[in-house]
Image (tube, rainbow over the protein chains, first blue to last red):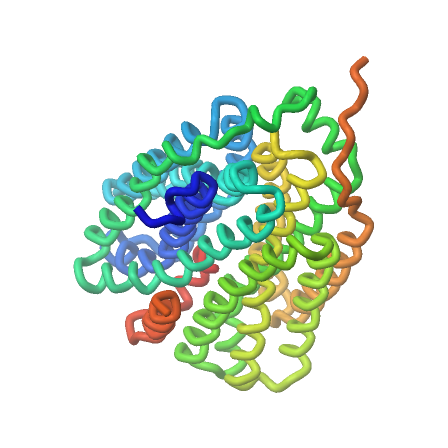
Length: 398
Length: 32
């Protein structure tokens, strides 16, 4: 066994990162199934869009419940159940012959599985396992693991679909997810070691009464708005600007590649500098990137630079936001609180996707949405600054 | 070194003809 896996906290870190890598990586491949599944079963983009909208919503709401489950019955069991749900949901896609069955499997069941195998549940396990001085870097590594999965598993998924058709690819990818079931045994975490005097309800109440939590929630909302709007609407924006599929594919590959480094360094820097200041910079620099895209002529190189720039500041918000939650409110109920904050992210995603399309339909361009994205980035940066980073003292017992 | 190799292969994977055809579907549904 390698030395790194003999150290208990490194083992938790790497195994937790692997679970996120597989979960987010497989999730990112779903768009690849739209064409082959749609052609065989006669479903259009609308059917898949609704299935994945349900998945995103269930992921957001489910993250709260999976967080509570992790904080109450243990993260190991939660991750095992979620991995099982995720794998069953994916296998269920194979047996889906009606639209409703697709909504149930790819939407509801997979969404629930994702809720327990991604950042809100995994990062608190890692945060509890590693030494405090290494915590932020560890969260950066785990977040980068998720980004690495998105980047690496997507072309793997495409190769599987090309080589063995979509049904075989679906089985192989569901097996990737099933790996999380035995791995969950290594991710039991130690929530009791961080036990305080607060109950779960009191901890949630305390966070909801604290202004900093609301600031984190709404800044995360902006993160979701940006990433969802850009990913969903970038193809149409580039096509409208006269660019072709090669430019689009290169831009997306660059976002994915730079996202890995952005996550890692956000976490690493968060260990040495103020997390709220770094978070404010991430949002501010996103605004700068969008301004550049709008100000410069839409050439391939401008798009590549924009993609690399946005990639650097893409999911770097995750280790910083979740790091702040653990730092301010403690690690005992970090999964629940992270789940609540993540709901803000998913609501932002939903609005970014919906309003992006609506604005395009009504105005015939994305200019308004880009301008709002800049405004929201600046607002999010400003929202981060008043966050009080010091650990919140538990309220005195009545 | 291994990571650099994996990243390079994955980057090339994103630019294969099959992915170029699929890229809009990929990002439209749960891409990054």
